[in-house]
Length: 293
Image (cartoon, rainbow, N blue to C red; front, side, top):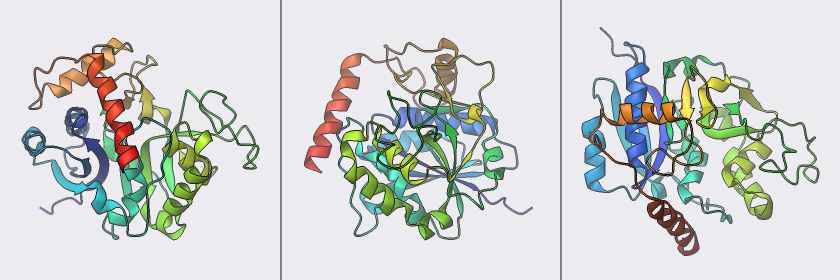
């Protein structure tokens, strides 16, 4: 019987968030069709050897294969990361380089933030037709349009966009890698962020939304459902704001319980939520890393 062609997924993680990735992978494995396989490319930001081993021991090798790539490996020669003013880690930009390090014969790739768990068959996403689009994504329910004064594109008028332009969340991106490369999307996004730093409150989202405005396929919102909004059957839960690994998590309790259900199937079984000091220390390290990068 022929081995099925694997679905290709890319994530980025540092050592602190590798625990989130472990739960994400188990949730994908638990809900995928029996005849499907996945290859997960992990862009790693100083993940320890011990945590890499724990993750490898946590996956089902009949379903999942892991391929590790260092951050410096995936950035093409001549390209530099934008330097924004946020406390987000530099690894948020790694999604921009996926079409350049993934094998060229792979034309459809799914990028996922690690702070997610899946409750449906992920292979369904790959059935979307991207032939006319660079990406498929989900509308950001907190922002919705460019003219949102809290988190939209604050200088949308200067950039020539109507305020009603729809705004997507970048936590889940179904990528047409061939079209992305052909249109030099990465270079355009980096330039956009560099030239608009004071407006880029969510820097990667700012650049992606400006450059790909009106050029993205809008996916079912249940494929990127925020943990702040109750729902009986989301396909994918996105832990925006506080992550369930923190004691201060204060969103839908049922979603947190689902996270720990999957985490309990990994080598992190028995993990107890940690305090705020660890979260603040991580943010401080993110800022220091940007300064010294």
